[in-house]
Length: 82
Image 1 (cartoon, rainbow, N blue to C red):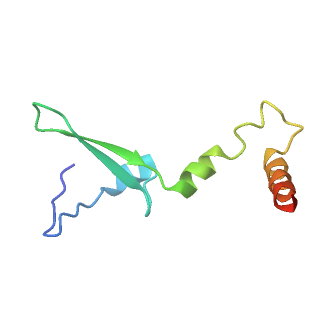
Image 2 (cartoon, rainbow, N blue to C red):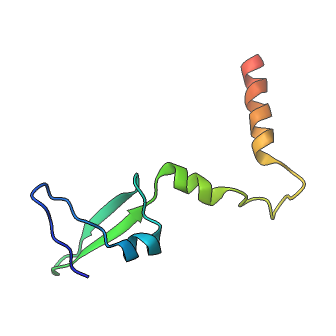
């Protein structure tokens, strides 16, 4: 796929690439020059909301009887009361 840089140094991400990597508004990219090559490595950095969504339920397999979020909320409330 070939894209063109605009006068404002903007590039359109092809729709198929955006879908494959789940790229949405708010995502950031890390650009790394590859020394000695005419190539650039681009790493997709998801938004904070996307990272949080990916973490939902990750610890459930280790302690299915616990609600870690509720425990954290209760701990924060207890700290505020002190």
